[in-house]
Image (cartoon, rainbow, N blue to C red; front, side):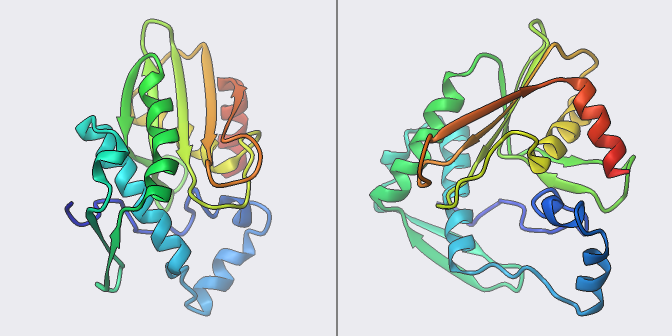
Length: 210
């Protein structure tokens, strides 16, 4: 498999850190002052590898278990490269995500680079999957998490951030249904959790971001 094409660039006001800077805006200036970076640790790099496998599976329409035993290279921002051999645990986790996304009705958009530059030039990120259906006016944001600490989709700022970005990216004018879904096979509890909301809630969230 090729080196990761997952976007590892971090924005100052990125989606994954929104839980922190929305509660404490001063943390952005503080971290910048001390030049603190969220450098990928072993668990984070493993998660990146799992995301790369998931993306490859969806784009190539291949079951994750067909990649068993194959090497997968991930490159850090500093150029350091790590190679992972895809094992059964990773394939099993990714398959839950792969099967769910493939089962949804609509057009599947993987690894969409989205931007909220109309709010701030430092707001951008990359989604895992977005599923849109023009006729039904539906959109679902699906976020794959490989970690073991359970994350809930309800009022999840990361997913709402992505939803706003995808709506802008795809130029969606009408939206009757919006779902935010987290797929987390390695955490306790349900592997797939979904929260339904609407465009009005997103517009409120956009004001909060601003």
